[in-house]
Length: 247
Image (cartoon, rainbow, N blue to C red; front, side, top):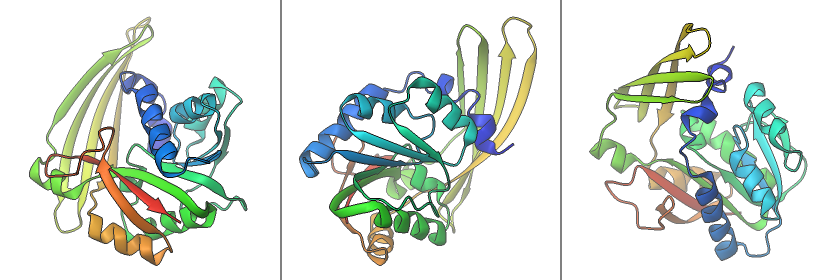
C-alpha cells in the first residue's frame, strides 16, 4: 500500500480541526476577485475532497484529481456532486478546460524535482482556459530556512480510535527538501489493540524566482503571491504562501 493509502485511514481525523469552510470561503474570495465569471474548478491533488464539496455547495462545477484510491473512496462517500478521478497530476489529461485550477495543502511541495514541478504545471496549463486562474500553496523557502522544522507530537481521538503522531524532520539543505518521518500509533478504543505505522513524506520548499521560471516555461504567468488565508505579503515567518497564476 502506498504512503497515501495508509495516510487516508486517519487523514480526516488528523485534520479535523482544519478550517475547511474558512479555506473554501477564502478560495471563493480569490476566485471572485481574479476570475469573477468562473463556473468550473479543477482540483489537482484533491485528497478526501473536503474543499471540493464546499466549493460545489457554493455553486461551482468541481472536478477533483488524486492518485490515492483510498482517499477518493472517502471523497466519493460524502456526496455525488463533485466529480473525482484517480490519476497522477503530472500526467493526467481530461481533454477539457476549466476556469479555475486549484492545488492546495502543499501538493506542489510534494513535487520534489524540477521535472515533477514542470509536469504538474504543464497539466495545469493544459486544463486552464485562456485568462483563467491557477492558484496553489506550498512551503515557502524563506520561512522554512528561518524557522526550521522541528520534532512535533500530535495527539487526537474520535469515538473509534486514538492517534499519536510523532514527526521528525531531516533537512537536505542542498536540495531544498525536508524528509518528514512519521511514527504513528493508532489505538482501537473497543479492543485496545495498537497498530504502529511509519511513513516518510518528502517535501520541497519553494522560492518565488524558481516558480516564476518554471511557470513561464509551462506558458503560465505568476502575478501575485500572498500569505495563505490573510493576503499579507510573504516574509520570513510565512510558512505557507499562495501563488496566483494566469494562463
